[in-house]
Structures are given as structure tokens and as C-alpha cells.
Length: 163
Image (cartoon, rainbow, N blue to C red; front, side, top):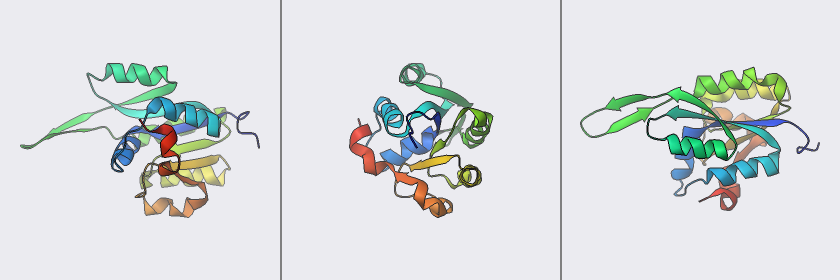
């Protein structure tokens, strides 16, 4: 199988990815990561699911310039006495777009360690459309462990994609 000739797509949970690598003490260079996905896995389209936060327009422009297709989720702001938390859960959008694009890709990569994607990953695997699951850190959902043959930990290529 020549992955470079296939039309493989990546579906990326940006919050899970970003927080996962930061929990390991490093930051991801999104430009390097996009190049890595293309060169190593033949990723033609990389969908990045991200909560929309006003004021981050320059970040969004840069991500698009690097080759990501951004799918925005409106965010909710939670305030308490001590802090402000911005929440933009992208799970439904990621699953929906993976299915919308079904006919356009040969294989899919899911970038997340979130067990909420278990049913999607199981569906992709049964239909021979799952290429890899890239998990951002060592602590990923036990629901994904049965897909061990597909799991790639970001630590294994950290030097190629870190800032």
C-alpha cells in the first residue's frame, strides 16, 4: 500500500491534542505537525476541530495557512470566583465530518485520546477505513486500548513536531 497515493484524511480534536502535549511539558508546532501528517501518513486533508474564541483570529489564519481545514464550535464561558473557563466540545462535529467526508478518503486518522470517539473508531476499523489513532499523551481512554495496533503516541515523534 502506497500511502502517498491514497487520499487519507486526519480528523483532529484540537483541545485534546493541545492539552495532551502540554501535560507532557512541551508545545506542538502545528505547522510541523501538518507536514508530518502529509509526509508520513499521506494526509491530503486535515480537519482541525476547534472552539471559536474571539481574539484568536491570527491563530486561525495561521492554522489555515499551514493547511488545516478549521471546523469551529461555538464556545461557552464558565466563570467562578477564581477563574474563567472556556469550553468548546467538538466531539459531535468530529464524528459528523468524518462521516460526511466518508466517500472522499481511503483511510482516516483520528487525533485524540478521548474515549467518546470509541464508536467512530470501531466503525472505521470494521470498514477498513482506520489508518491510525494518534494519542497526545500516555493517558488515553481505556476504551481505545482494544485498538492498540492502530495507536501511535505523539511522544514517539515529539522531536519532529515540537516548538
